[in-house]
Image 1: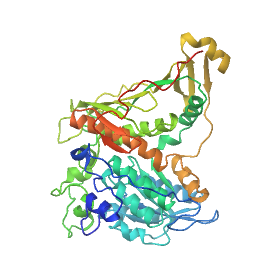
Image 2: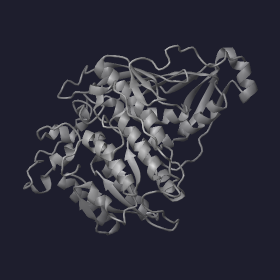
Image 3: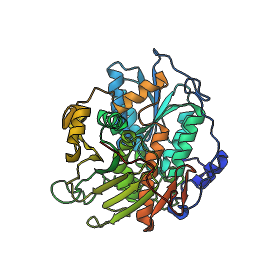
Image 4: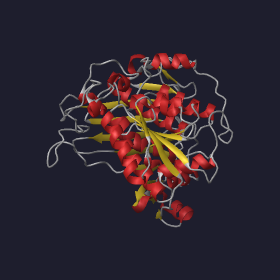
Length: 468
């Protein structure tokens, strides 16, 4: 999905006049500065683009990308409509004729309504009856889709990762600020109550100084029943073609490539795009973002300052470029570290743990949280919390899409807003850069740019020594 003119990231962002022509160039310019620009925030209650909806209005939705995740969102929204939620899917967009036809048919079958389908997403954005869009395209398209949608006056739900690069995430954030549109990034765990309970507990000093966090997202995608031979080896339609005369098997390959490097038509690249660096960061962008985004909420974290990455293709040795096993360490300005681990060849994941000086936080059943005192601070813990170990049950929370839809009407900040989504993207992309470049990657959060050395070379803690 791209302009017919085949504009790439450099050209698009240069034409925007936003001083970010380096966006999307990834590791080739990973140490180049981003030209920071002044951004004036617009009140979402008085957006500069688009319109405001009343409580009784139906939210008209367009879906850009109706493959795996987009198809799932289509089904969710259709169920909402059938259950009386004031929402209607009114148009869809995809570069694959078969997917377009299937999506249109699903809407007709579910709610007996005919909708339009498009190959070029900008035509969908021109429609006045589309109030908001769900974006479920490959990672390399997220920035362009999101920015153009907000400029066209649409509120946006964009699947994770928020973008392909950090610079693009900053552009998405700045566009949300400038337009006043509601932006939600689709890492669904960000609406789980555990992370919000942990956030409140940490803010009031419940476990003392946070030290380090471990998080893991692992699978085993090769061997045994249903062997796929490796993660992201999704089904390939054998008749798929870039020939415009192929009927429903036609894929507009030029549209799909868009801002990515040009490449001859490749069915594996289309159907299994997460295996290739041109369109994805592999495990980091597909899976670890699901953890780092809500942890960014729980820790009220800024962008990290330092990243290392390791791993490799240890088992799933097919045509993939991304590792099947990947680890990264992220150091943060508030003096703690997040350790993220993953493998697609062994599903025995490490448990999620948030470690503080006085105590430790664990997830509990039904998305609640459990906090346990360090042995040295049991008495302090009992005084502060009533026991050496406590459980805080989860409260009911709207699901992630529901949260977005509610914010479209209320104009409140959604759970994974554009600023938080950028901060999480910074850590994800830094880890990918560190792995691909075999070096330590540094980010200056104040200047919002990559730098050659740690932005705080004298890193003595600014926190006083804690006393119980």
